[in-house]
Length: 116
Image (cartoon, rainbow, N blue to C red; front, side, top):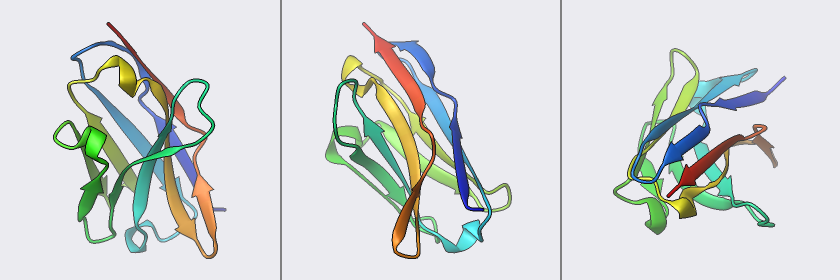
């Protein structure tokens, strides 16, 4: 069973940092690209945050460039989202995602709340 489980969310003050984790299981993690998305409170869509390829190359949305970074550990089957210089606009539920065949597989999400 393909499964993604996020953790590491919480409350932080503006300017602070958090590291989110996504534990993958049920598939050959090292062969799959991974993405992070977020959904703001009351928002109807999940916005792309960043992506890391199976070879470790990453790309980011403009609104997080220079502040967020994604890494992965193919031994532990983990992908991480390091978030620095957080601000109130970063308040959202964060999700990791992978592509499985013709479908997207999502985790349950982890909430990040940034207070000013």
